Length: 285
Image 1 (tube, rainbow, N blue to C red):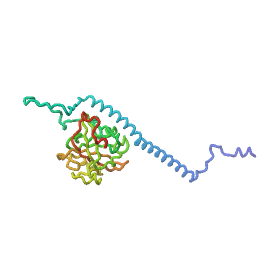
Image 2 (image 1 turned 60 degrees about the vertical axis):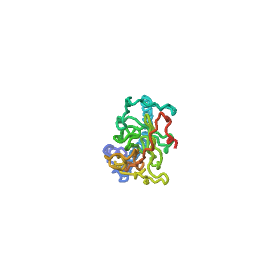
Image 3 (image 1 turned 180 degrees about the horizontal axis):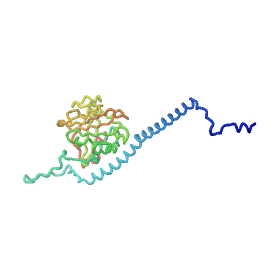
Image 4 (image 1 turned 90 degrees about the horizontal axis):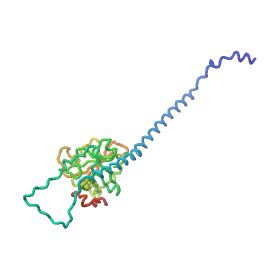
């Protein structure tokens, strides 16, 4: 009888499988969606790690290279000497030709991507210093703060405007919102120190109470380019009213929806590095 049953049974490969239950199909689809979401989540996490930490390491390495480059560049420049205070004054005869003037400030030009100054902000730490490069394209901002092309150079009449990332790529301006009216921003060049002071009322901390009418800090849309005008907030084609410095970065943190802007004004004459190689007193404030 068992032999007959074996003979009557259909071949194994022709047997019809029972239809898959609906619950099994739902579980399979849910499992696939879950795995896909986990994969996307892992990719997003790796991207955040890259943006917040890996780019900081790359920017730190770039800053080290720029620091070495600018120090070598400055070392190759002709030294500027300051005569001692008791040195006798030499009066040239009237017939003597006047000394040849140095290059006008307006004639100073820097190639895009080249370092040319160092930014010191004591309020953000005694060791805060960032090499500034020419240009504000992504390639330049990946290395550190970048100077807006065609704005003033350090110490010039006009607006020396600098952009920097808020988060990632070194995060040079992550704490820009900590600056207060009167805080010093020192710009170092090959020959001089320039001290700027954040605009506003030092006594009250009100950014909007500066006699110039220019706010020390403001939040604007990315299209408000008048913040880097020769006089901040003024016409882009008008003559400057003073020597200013403007720092711009993204706002709020982790977003590029708006711009955080800090305005400062040159405080006094430049200080020669020959006279003060360690920098102005503002560096210790």
